[in-house]
Image (cartoon, rainbow, N blue to C red; front, top):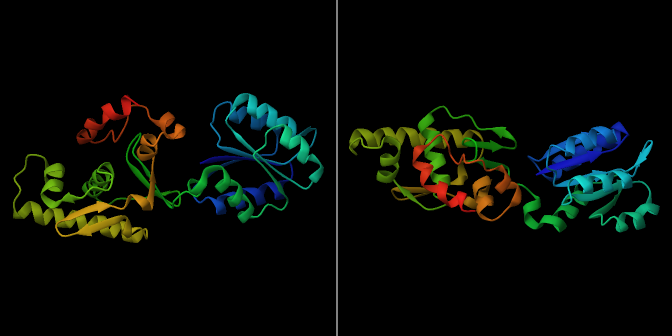
Length: 260
């Protein structure tokens, strides 16, 4: 999720940014103290919700809210202010929320949960399948020591929680090479490396093991392609014909994304 925070007081701006990042780990927060810079930003970047102070020097958050709505009609406006008397004007502008300073993390989380339900809180693990496969934990990209370990995880994500057997995984990773003891041993090395990589990041439980097969627990992470298939507009807009573009075995999914 991407949020906008606007306040002409530096400490107040820092407070709202910190509260947002605590409420929604891994979110993007664009912070501004000037109206002109704010408007320039939203002309080029989609924003889910804007948290605005009402008194902004020579302008007001009420005027800014109207301008933001003109540029991005679907943006949610939440006022964060010390002044109760503006509540009526905020309602007239169809503001989503009205918080009194200081806005606590719990206050922000309540507003976002009202807006988005459980999706307001992003999971610690974000999986990117559009524009190259990557995994982020608390916003930090996961580093894989072996390309095959990364490819195996990418394939498990593509399987959307369906189990993959050892022969299936070997056939994918080494294509037409014979399935023999040597290949099985190498697969165990790759699997161990993947487990260690996930364990170091504290997310080893995204892999579900059973006899001779494994899968990912799709409840443990957010994934752009899963969200695309759920109809999430932001995920749909992020697709540019580049689903798992590093792997030829993912090409069979292209038609599914194209028709949507």
